[in-house]
Amino acid sequence: MALYTDVIIAGFGGQGVLLVGNMLAYSAMQEGLQVTYMPVYGVEMRGGTANCTVVISEEEIGSPLVMYPHSLIIMNQPSLEKFRPRLKEGGVQIVNTSIVPQSLLDGDQARSVPVPANDLANELGNPKMANMVVLGAWVEATGILSLERVKQGLPQVLGKSDERIIQANHRAMQAGADRVREYA
Amino acid sequence: MSSKPGPISLTKGNEAIAKGALAAGLHCYFAYPITPQSDIPEYLSKHLVERGGEFIQAESEIASVNMLLGAAACGKRAMTSSSSPGIALKQEGISYMAGSELPAVIVNISRGGPGLGSIDPSQGDYYQATRGGGHGDYRTLVLAPSTCQEAYDLTIRAFELAFYHRNPVVILGDAILGQMKEPLKEWEYQPNTEREAADWALSGAKDRPSRLIKSLYLADEALAGHNERLQAKHERMRQDLDWEEYATEDSEVLVVAFGSVGRIAKSSVRKLRSQGYRVGLLRPITLFPFPEERIRELAWSNRLITIENNTGQMVDDVRLAARNVADSAFFGVSPGRLPSPEDFLQPILEVWEQEEARK
Image 1 (tube, rainbow over the protein chains, first blue to last red):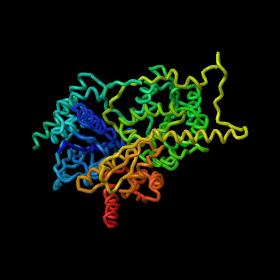
Image 2: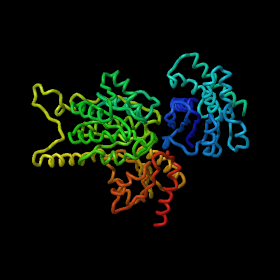
Image 3: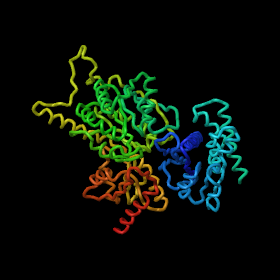
Image 4: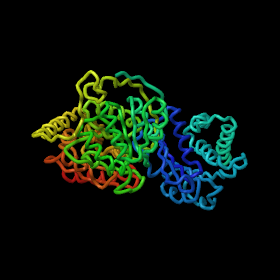
């Protein structure tokens, strides 16, 4: 069976969900895989809801849009309510439990990986890096791409090579990945 | 023309079109911004200018289409882009360019309508693109890419066709194509833009007789002759027919879908194939000319269903193509709602069951 996976990444505008999608798509391309990245967002720069779908495959990709994704990255509660019912059976969801109450995951049949992303990012010095934390968590939880590959792509996707920014974001990704390992 | 492979990058559909236009030797671009295609002017405002081309953000869509006409009359490789209501405003200019036999590329990354509609994906401009929103007996070639790579390749193709036929060419995409990112392999291409317009362009009449480019024919019989020439040209465009077929060798139900919906429907067809249903797909790449002969051929052995992200437009052409052989069912996702492969399974299966019941 050829490799195929897809993920919907959702949150408030400004939480960096589209950047996470871009990072995954870029890394998959660098890995020599087929990939599509499809953003859906309103007309607002901040405050509205934003989500994107990334499809990764060894074969030609048909639809860039997915009704029932294999995995989710959920950055806030409205996104959980909207996308959780669509998660494929046996799928995995990374949930930002700094914002989404942990109690909402209790009794959920899906494999949920709670990651207090804002808190972990805060500890590393910048709450804006919460998106990098969940990115690292998804990579670790799914095993589709290597964390090293994803880390390498950051300067290209950001269009920045400031070593301090890159290193800080790498630490945030690592923190997310470590969290999954501890939790497992 | 020569080509060699260039870099691979993760590129948005809109940018793929802008890059394709640059690769095709774009000289001039005129437009007024509108979502969801503004990445095209954004990209060209930097890169076209760096390459010494002319970039003008016009005061309106109407101004930009008339600038396009002017540049085309001078034999330049020229392009405009907009989205649905903006393209509606350009129709008068497109009719004048068709009447004056001028080559130009018009990109429509369409949005929900009618009116201002929304910024959501929609295929509601199929009629506008293929029937012409402008007046008179004219046709534009219409190309409908479904991937970012195809958006790049077909933009280059659009310039070739525009100059070959001396006719406007429309690239019809939607917000899915425009906003999606995929790996893009650029290729270098050397268009011979020096001579392609040499025998008709308004290039200064020094040392040669003067030329006149017009769409007005008042003399006795003049307009009739002009229309007959144009009609013969529309017939010649059939040589440039293009479409994709998938799993049609032994199919009994044929899905016809174009653009983004064509690739989404391909996922549905693959899924049904894996469950043993003999379903195939035909995705027209040129919407005008339309692959009607091939659809008619397949209609002898297939029950047809046309799927669109509108309330039913291309289905008219499918029914015309298959007339006296078969009808086509229709399934539409309304503009403003995002289609997914799961949406199409049930409608295709219903057609499959009708076919089984008939046997």
